[in-house]
Length: 332
Image (cartoon, rainbow, N blue to C red):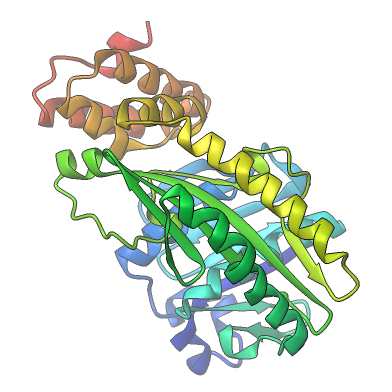
């Protein structure tokens, strides 16, 4: 048996209350190219891996088929499937719920016929909300400001040399009257890469727009996926632990001091289907990084039917940037 969850454009909900879109997705409003790409980047950041790319869809698995999870992003919808284990259902439900935070999308769970969007979230206990706000104002802000960060709502930005460091505190949409959960996203963005690629940099960019983005549990000793504020928490212990892990996150970020070191990290630990990075490397003729990234692309795609398309895309990038190379030359 499988468990299914759908993510569609919010306006499509009004036109599809009888659920006919489950058998005919063309009844839905299509994603814009920007929305499609943003959803793709979110899935990659959350640990999903590209399995198959077709003209109007991308199929992902999750951490080497963990919990039988599959995600299919099409022009019209983002579809999730998992086994019926508690972990599998939680993972796809949580991912879909996080994606509605922009207000553009709605989540549909066909098992119980329930919709979820921003307006449908539960009202959080005022004391928990006050505690969360107090932590941001009286613990996190005093920690980040002396390090050169500038705060904008729940995100802290620091620009140094050609990099923007970003730490974002993201509230879970599953918050209740009894508990506030929040994630911490730790990111680095390169002004230099944007400049070479002709991109205009938004100084207040969001975490999913950054060149390198990791959840705090992936770069520190924090053992869970999110922090939880509960009324019964020992506030001092909670705040002390939070500060410890934010310090560790900053150590990870600040160890990357320039675009060259950022690229090193991206090639080693980032998604292997980063063709924009390859475009930058060819424009700047970074031969060593080019070979490593193309090798990583080959290892990621060689056992799938995507490789011929990926190889053609690589060769197209080389040709566009007047690089006398072929992908096959680098993987011999």
